Image 1 (tube, rainbow, N blue to C red):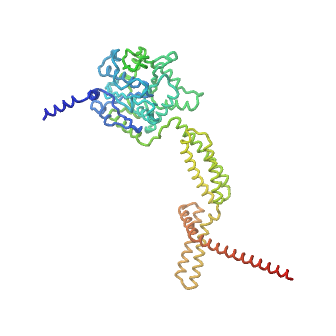
Image 2: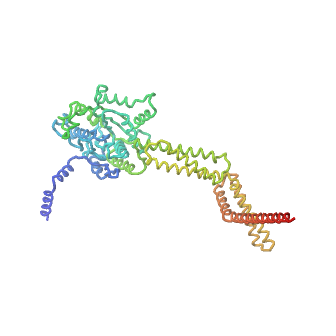
Image 3: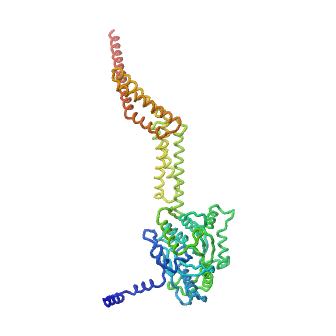
Length: 561
């Protein structure tokens, strides 16, 4: 049986395609592991099993962790840079090779997937499957994790996706490399503010600086005559870009204060362009021979500055060093926050501005409605009958909606529709309040409750007298009891109105009075009034007819005479 199984295995291997062999080979070699996976619905999911498989090994889980992440706009060479990090770590950490770690001139660059061109190559967050171990000068044993991230601002990602990836990588890393092209521009700082604030919202407020080291990396620096390549020139540019002075607009000052408050350390490094072959050749595979020497010289400075054992930055959360096994739990906790609905959804600058613009238009129109209605039926105005008030409400409402429609707003008609609907809803709610306030001015409605219960007491009093006269004393006693209850209720209502206490009891008494009025007394009174009016009308008609007849008779008599 074992021979048969062995033959089947051999046959299966022989029938495998070349791609399958390549896949198996990559699974045995160190490779990039997706730990935060991008879904088709623009959401992200943590692959907890893959994360644990990489990190929770016996030789790693009790070490303190160092996490180096690279984030920034897509197609700016993040994965390309990380592969040089891998070369350094393999040479220095694994092989203890202190010579030319950067590699041979003709060796292609391998590691994280990268390619030339204009389309994105990385999605989600990738972790290198090989976790490098090192020992610090303090004797602490650490594990070094390298993370590659999905580029921001491509044509397939929403603002929320960009913010989530950048914020997550910033929260997880001890060194976040912000990869920029050519310069540090104001929009780069604005995006950084948005992303870091999105990350800070997800963290519990511990009173400490939320993130650790931010390393600006400016690629293809074009002004070496203003600031030289490297860390010194980078620091000069960084100080200029983050400078705060009294002549700046408050918005610019706030942005810079925000960025400085988010990180314990901020640095910058300026890199030259890697060369025309790197940028334009479709067959470029990372060989050093095709990269400009100036780029390689600065690369030899940058990489050890970040990854040499004496320069490693331990991951800390709330000031406490994090071990590998704890890092897995933090990944899980952070991801759950972004999977839920606890955080507000970040918006593009256009959407955010359009929202603010429309909300301001709603507020102005609503204020206009309230001001005009105050002139119609405000606090000092007398009671207005219901029909007139409805007419005035429609007039003022139409005027407020016209004001909203007339105001120039960003986002277009479709975008503004939901805000117009909100305005209409707010106006109707305000009208209900105006109507209630107006009704409270109606002296007859205000006096309805005492009048009803007084009338009830009088009715019971009269009924008690009648029943007493005819000798039905049991019913007379019941009427006396009803009269007492009516007077007690009236006294209670008066106390509530005077003292302001037991308001729920007062409301219940008012509702009872309204019920009695609408279902009994109003009907009787209306019937009595209608009968009275009919009798009056009949009397007037009869008198008029009699007078007309008398005039006619008198007129006829005069003619005959």
